[in-house]
Each structure stands twice: as structure tokens, then as C-alpha cells.
Length: 190
Image (cartoon, rainbow, N blue to C red; front, top):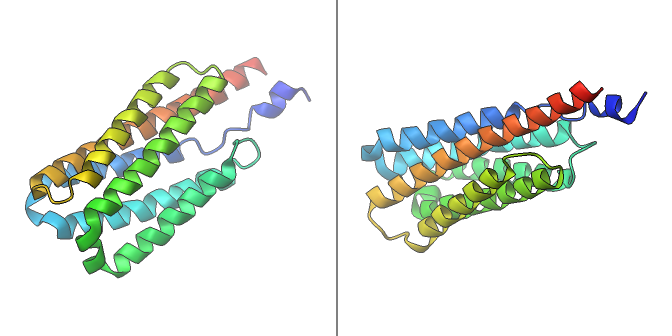
């Protein structure tokens, strides 16, 4: 077998990023559609989304540990998301009191992940990596806004959080299709 034919099956479960992106998008849309529920709904939704994203992250990492550079970091971030998601669901009062900080720092962590993934894609000469990098920077800016203005009006927090979730969803789906394209390109070479 050639190296190329061995590489055909290397990218597995790229579609987990689509599922994660859909979760992010659904969270963003739900935040905008239900602003009257305020922090209660947002805190529960955030906890559920964080738990779901953690599960998809762990599944992706374990399914791709043979080829994914730094797969342990991807696995660790998924485990952290699961643990924090469970904690926040178990203690909703804590979640409501600290929601802007949890959302802000979690989205900041996601922005670093997206920026790192875009640089990895650049290293493999995958077109469109710059858009992911730009989106990661935008997500970082939105997350900083959420962190530094926690006392802002609830509408501001909801709007910024909803926007950040939508951006994260779009970026996750874009990354999924870049990974799929890599898999198809390698398959065509075989």
C-alpha cells in the first residue's frame, strides 16, 4: 500500500464539526429569539450546548488520534467542556451569577482553538484557512467584549453572546467542510 492510500481514511468523523456548528447556531438563534427569558434560559442553554460540544469534541479527537496533531489538546478541551457543562447544569444559580464570564472565557478558548486549526490548515496548504483565522479573531473580540462588560445591559450580553455563538457555528461548519475536502483530495490521489 502507498502512503497516499493509507492516508485516505485518516480524517474520520469530520461531520462532528457540522453537528457542533449546528449546536452553536441553534444556541445563537435561540438566544435572539428568547431574550425575555434572560439569564435563566441562557444559562441552561449554555450548559447544555457546552456539554454537547464537549461530547462532539471528544468523539472527534478519539476518532482521529492517529493523524490529528495535538489530538490530546482536542480531547482535553472536550473533556473540560463536558465537566464544566455538567457542573453548570447541576448548579444553575452559580451559572446565572457568573454567566458572562463563563460564556466569555469559553468562547475565548474556542477562538484560540479555531485560530490554531486555521494555522494547521495553512500548514497543509488548504485554501480558505485565512477565513477561519479571521473568524477566530472575530470570535476572540466578541468574547473579550462579553468578559469586560459583564455589567452591561442584559440585552447587550444576550446580543453579544448570540452573535458569538452564531459565528462559532459558522466557523465550525466551515472547518468541517475543509476537513472533508482534505479527505476527498487525498482519496482522489489514491
